[in-house]
Image (tube, rainbow, N blue to C red; front, side, top):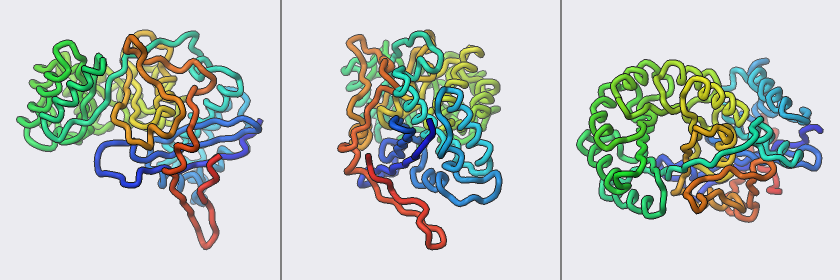
Length: 392
């Protein structure tokens, strides 16, 4: 069968705030091939990705992403990789292409899984999947008292683990950051798994990260995530040699396999965190999961948007029994919750189970999405090259 349509839908909250919350808008992808439909989601600026989908060709290595997708055959899993390779070759100089491809790749896996009546994780070659331990993923409070309250709520909800990130952390004094860390530990209790996300706040400033290490060790943080930007390999590695039991975590900023491979090989990571909606889709995320497992690095999903994206992020490591911790955002905006009819929630044992249903096992809620749909039109030389398609 051939790909008949590639539809992108820009969704947004009425007001987007200047905070580290990726659930405030979304780029939903719908792919049709004959009677079969697949859904995906890009974790990238929606309007920029729409532009990369349809922009006029600049030169032979800078073609619109859609040119490599429309009309392609999609009969088996090999076709998904072939289409991805074609996009990367034809859009080599279009730097948004991997982010845009990510949603397309996810939708293709969903479509093929639905057609073959198999969950994506089985199509990826796993014989079985394993429940994961979800960590409640939240932003630091504006004050230590607010963080303490958040941590207590998370513990009361039965979560074994929580990650606090962004917010004011790293932007003020060391003393303020230490107070935030102490509050998170107190609220979670002695047995809670505490994870800390610096959100690249120190760029490549090794001294700034070092100044927080002793407190991170004191509160027994399992990991320090993204103290630096993804390319700062020497800084990551240097900090990993000093961090003791506080493992280095990173990788969500990687947008191709080679970036992730370098993080695994040279950054001293204990945990590599990959977003299927950024790196090129489920296909490349699975490549990283395989590589990380072979290198003794724990693979962790990154996700902070809808349950469609959550399911996609779980598929690449669903069958890795010893890679057990997973991100589970708990402060989603109403848009992200309204996007799907069904939701992935912890079971009675507090564990997260990968959907055992055709494709991603998640159904978009078109009525729920409709209030957040933003009409977009792109014209070039007076010719309309994109308009928001009907939500169908």
